[in-house]
Structure formats: C-alpha cells, structure tokens
Amino acid sequence: MNPPNLLQFSALLIQRFQLSKLLPLFSEQDQPIIAGGAVRDFLLGRTFHDLDISTRNDPTSAARRFSRDIGGKWFWLDRERRQSRVLLNKGEGELCFDFTPWRAETLEGDLRSRDFTINAIAVRLNESGDLGLEDRLGGMSDLASERLRLCSDEALTDDPLRILRGLRLATQLRLSISAELLEQMTQHAPLLRHSAGERLAHELQLLLASNPQLANLQQLQKSGVLVEFGIRLDDAALVGLADEWSDWTRQIASLDDAHGRRFQVYATGMVNLPGLLKFARLLDRGCDSGQRRELLSRLRCSRTKSRLVEHFWDIFAGDFNWPDRWPERHRARLRRLEELAPHTEVVLLALWLFQRRKAEELEVIDELLELAAKNLVNGRLEDLLSGGDLLQLLNLEPGVAVGHYQKLLRREEYSGRIDSRKEALQYLAERADKEIDKVVP
Image 1: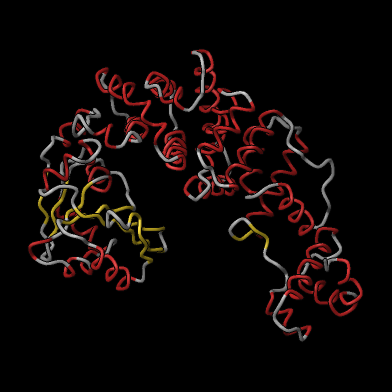
Image 2: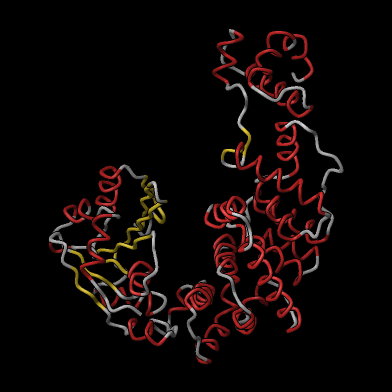
C-alpha cells in the first residue's frame, strides 16, 4: 500500500472533482469529509470515479448548488435519509458524488456505522485545501495486512447486503476473510431474503463481474449466500464454473482492439455484460428451469435484463434462434438483429464468447459486431429519416401519421429494399403513399 500523500489527493480532488466549487458551500462548523471507496482506492493506487461526501448536517442544499455550478445532474437516492447524488459526464468518463448526513452524532459514530474498516478511512476537507486523515478504526492497518474486517458487530445485521459487498471487496482487492468473519456471514445470510430483490441482483452481478476465482466461489458457497438464492452447486460444479470463467477471461483478453473495446463498454455500462453473463450461467448450473425464472422474478430484474438472461440460457444450450441466412444489405441485417434480442451487441458478444460455432458463423458474428459498432446508438439503429424530416418532406401534421411512415420505412429496410437515406427519400417520393395502408392499424 502506498503511504498517504494528502497533497496529491487534495490536488486530484480540486482539479478533477472540482471540489474548490464545493467547499465554500459549507459553513466552517460543518466542513465535509470524504470516506469510502475513494480514500481506500487512492491509498491503494487505484483509480476512482466516485466520491462519498458526508457532513454533520443535511448536505442537500449544498449538493444541489454544487450540481448547478458544475453542470451536473442532481437527484435523490433516499429522500427520507436526505441522501442524494450528483452525476457529471466528462470526456474521460462519468463522475459520481454521493451526499449523505452523518449517521451518528459524532464522526467516530458515523464511521463505526459503515460496513468495513477499509471503507471507514476518512479525509476532512476545508476551504484552504488542507486535508486531515481520520483512521479511527484501523482501516489503514487492515489495508496493509490485506484483511477484511467489520466496523462493528452490528454491521451485517444493519445491512445484510454487506455480505455480498464484502465478498466482492475480497475478490477485487485480494483481501483475506478470516474464519470468524466467514462464520458471521453464514449466520447472517438468511437475512438476505428480506433485502430488496433489485439490490440483491445488483450486488451479486457486481461480485460476479469482479472475476472471482475458485477460492472466492468457495467462500460464496460457504457463506450460505447461494443457498439463500436457491442455487445449489457441488464442489465439482464450482470447479467447473471457475475454469469456464477463467477461459472467458482469457478469450476476452485475446480479442482485437475493436471487439475488446465493445466488451469494455458493456462491462462498465448499464448492462454489465461480464456480471450478467456469469449470473445467467450460475442460475443455469445451479437451478432447474422453473427455479431460474422464479428467481429472476424474485430479484425484480428489469424486463431487458430478464430477456437477456433468457437469451444467454438459450446460447448456453445451443438453442439460440440464429438465422440460417442473413440478408446482404447492412440495414436489413441490423433490423434482423434488433428483432432477435434487446441490446443486440451484448447478445452478439455473448455468442462470440460462448458458442463453439462453425468458422463461417463466427465470421458472420464478427461482421455483425463491426456493423453494430458503427451504426447502433445506445443499442438501437437510428431511423434514416427523423420525425422532423418526415413532417417537412410530407407536409404532415404532428401525430400518429409520422410513426406510421417510420414503421413503413423500417419494414422496407428489414426487407432489404432500402439501405440509405437517398433510397429512403426516393421511396417516399415514389411509393410511400401507395404502401402506407399496409402499416396503419
């Protein structure tokens, strides 16, 4: 672990996170502290994009003002607890600022209410830019010793999801989990059934995305977490999963720059491809088909993620509905892709990674991935002519007619008869009025 260089940390906070605009918004008696992952990762020499900012009193008004000053987006995380977030999109990625009031009357009480000591190392901020390190629970010593330790005996009772978070931290940071802590996790695992399903799914996918090795999967098994999810795997199945996931990691590392970048996009975005793919595989190996769908419902996975998981199951079984022939024209191919699955690039990447297909099919997947990377925006193919274009070109009034014409153009793209804006304009001029009745309900 690197020795703390608070001057370097201060410069980073001011230059990248623009904290010089935040500090004047607080009174001298209520200067903020930063704790959690940012301080931990700085001490470990890791990059970070999130700041946890807490104050003795309600920080909401300062958070809103800060968001306006930096051009960010502010929203509530938990209105009752006065917890809010500011997101800022910058050229090098998204920055996240979480604002919370202390969870106790004193700073030490607030730090003791956190999950693990390595996340309870705090830095005091003041307007002059001076920083003061607060390590009241021995988190720096635990980091140096590479061990995970709870902030208090009540930590897992207060939030059982900390079991999954702890297993993830141990995986990501290569920390040891003592037999005593693993026993505490096992005792508290039944409390997970009372946690919100979407939070459970999120934490489990983050854990799986952190490249767990066999030892980490064995800890997950021994902690009782898998049983609480209804997932039952014997030792041989765990070894098989660990080997398979290591093989996936090697395959991804061997990708060329273009495909590798697409994996990176979906590893850090909303879908979290590595986590979701491993989540699907875990359910595929550890549950029967009825239990799998029951668990998806219990975990309140979004409709999109549920559909993706079900597509992954088809891919694992070799039953994915892959067309025997693909049209020649590019937009026809992309329209077929949209019809196959949501987030078509994700499904293509999963097919490339898992399916042991014929060489000619892999060639088609490569071509489709290249097409998707060039033409899809946020996972969707944009229309050749926008609604505004159609209003102007056809002298339409705003309303359902615009949608009917766009549906007609998409149908023509799907058939391969239209592949460019020029062809779309020509079609509108020559045939659209004759064909429109075919798509009007």
